[in-house]
Length: 269
Image (cartoon, rainbow, N blue to C red):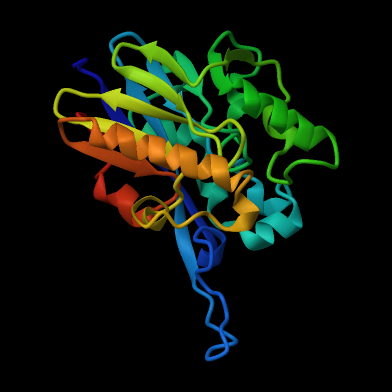
């Protein structure tokens, strides 16, 4: 296995109702018609994969002005990135020992505003930005029309970027580093399989916001699902990856704070 390392970057906290990320979490019943709502903290993270062939940035986080009017008010009211202004991409990279100039490629798991808010840092450069074909189409469709999803902002990704469009279900980015198409949350979510010397890191991303989505197969809330059928197919694909791997596998979820912290900053660093 390749001697790569994965460095996790903590990009701050989003506060939201847990019912958004686990379908049915706070549903009322005849016995309890008005259940209490659980407002929880979720992590926003990026990663740097320091590979012998290239140094790859996974996602770019939220725009630092998310809470100052950059995000639409109804969306920010539901998903408050309360400390986005404290998490500029360059500063968080620096804390992990990297600089923007160190980044050879960017992989966008998808183009929602809590993932694509730092893409402007790569505008006008020749740094390749990997994105799935279906994601790029849906992002522009959503941001440029009244259809699609409100979670896309053209200001995040409508730049002079060196797009590298992934067309297939799997794409080998580098030795032992494979991108995997996981539609469901959006049409073009990308995850990854990274085979390190001692373990495999399986990046589920927003296919699984939290552990309950993976272990209990509880879907995301309806507002966070583009297609529940595709989401379930993608979940079973991930679980098959774990079953067929005869070595330790760590599954990295999209926003699970406890899970994120359990990995203590990354792997093989």
